[in-house]
Length: 126
Figure 1 (tube, helix red, strand yellow):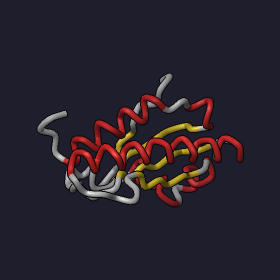
Figure 2 (tube, one colour):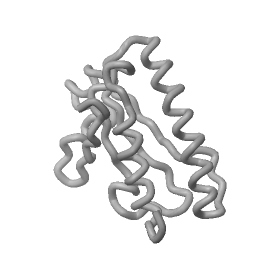
Figure 3 (cartoon, helix red, strand yellow):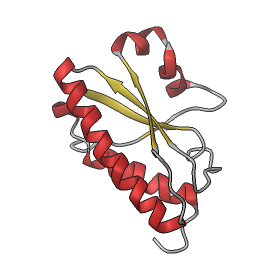
Figure 4 (tube, rainbow, N blue to C red):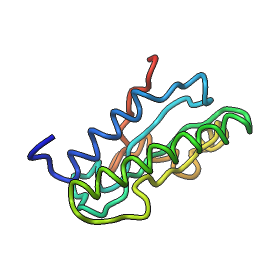
């Protein structure tokens, strides 16, 4: 949308991506936003940091990563059209398992962090 800052555009795209994601198809329990977009400091070449609570099979993981690659290619092209700057990638994914979440390991710890918590993004079908 016209007049959007870099972080606003990235936030809108993260919400669109989350709404399009089919949790049952890909074995996804939750999706979280972290980083510069959440902290409203993203610039024209900033990535979009997403934490995926993944509990699926190996095939679902492969399908999910392919789905994210398609989204990434679209986001890279859109960002270049908006800003004139070419990025190799926009999406920065962090997949956390049920075990990671239970142990509060990896990026899963951010979902309940008091000082810089991740933002939960509503998933499609939820």
